[in-house]
Image (cartoon, rainbow, N blue to C red; front, side, top):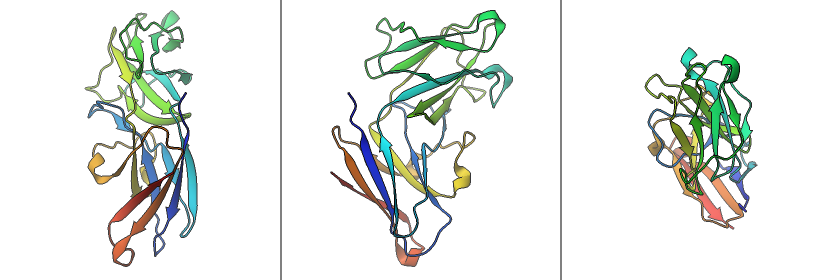
Length: 217
């Protein structure tokens, strides 16, 4: 059973800012075609703090990518566990849906969740939105050169890392593409950690680099 880790993010800036703290998750072996979404959007006041809980609680939504970006008809979000492989179909020529029967026959490891494109009426290129705790993490199959064609399996395994950045909240949303994780502060999550205090600071009288420091409990 996954341990829930509570992050407490404290704003220790010396001056007001329009920036929020955006928190991202990243899949293992992520493609440069993926579109990343701020999983958490935090806006603590100066001297104040804001919490969020991290635990692996995956979901996936599939859609018809053939109509472009944004995709066409989309399914509900289906809960999926690591080790499970679901099949996407489009019965009666309608939008794609998922069968929640696990068809993993060793295709995936116990740490991976996956979807196989079995749409054939008509053949459909899929898009996918992967979520964690009900909030979107990454879009797959929405770029023109990122084709999830018939028979292809897309898997997801989240890195044991949390990425923090400070940015204006206009960057949040399904259309926000993040390719460069080097501009972020990376936190390596140790298994069994139940609490992490995160301090957000900015030197040079509030004009310096955004910095995040961490204390585990």
